[in-house]
Length: 472
Image 1 (tube, rainbow, N blue to C red):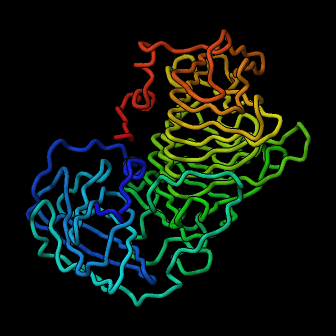
Image 2: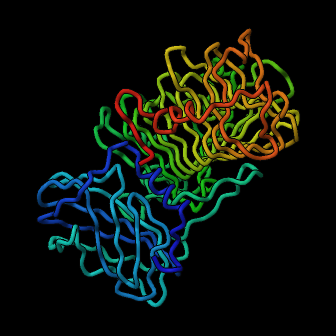
Image 3: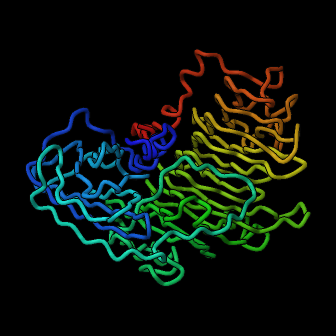
């Protein structure tokens, strides 16, 4: 890409994470298409635009693809893209498939998109090629008149803590400039739940619900009979789209029922948004749990997401496997917990209580090899030498902090503790090659050997019996 195009390793890695929503392996070779059509729609604002690109394969089924086109104006540039890996040389742009949409059956379509910048004018490309074959069925939709109102509007963050910014901008809605959900009435629906309700039960293909920047105070549920749903924020950061409520355990039927979001449909995905429970603890020690995200969905992917809460922020239930990429999680006590399997990759985890507390409370079943993996992430907190890595909610809890940066908030001498009669010494708690002021080796900090660690990679945590690999 040109020097003005964002192509850092973090962005490309996050692109792969967002795109690998369905866990389909990329074919080793691409086949040539015998026919194709492309719809290209833009939503413009002064100096910038979002482009939605739908590729329809009119020929033989293909197992990998590359889309090429040329910008008519030399001032047009791709800034960030999604659902494909974009490169640009001069005015020539190439979009190459990523794992989840590598295959396109005959007459099937895939949708990709990007945010771009322009100067001079912003005309649409005249032609497209798919695997080197000109798309003779191409259609293009003219850009609307540039308007300042089309520019994304930032919402204030509900947390003073920094959140990651490495993930790509999100996908536009299939209609181009109109989001699926907008609280101000400019979308198809005003609430996130109404958009989910409109998805047919038993859907067999991915449904992307795009959400305009704003605050959505509601309880959101993706039911088990609606798989393959993506909730994707349209802001420039995950702080721009906030789904929030303030239920807590004492007044809403217990911890599990207190969540702001319940994600139950398999292969669900959340991208570029915030899920928050803003219930404020009052100092009591009874019934203060207030969950942000209750996850039951297997093969769920979270990318560039913020999960905000106090006690019990993120519940990963027994049935769930989840890959959490370049995201931010904060809380006070046991704020990553449950019996499921989770890989937290390149994440920022923040203990916000000044007196510290355990971060994780795993309840891994004895028959499960893998519970929680905190991988190449950063652990920070409000105060020094107060925060514990975790405690065992169940006697066989499994947690590994691997190759992560442990800040001075970690309680160095004793980073694990007991829970509910379960001894941390009998749990499967380990560290491997961590760094930072909170990392050391002593008798209270079991370390994995190199040979053991080879069996505890992110891919092995997530593979299960179906070989799921959202990492690529």
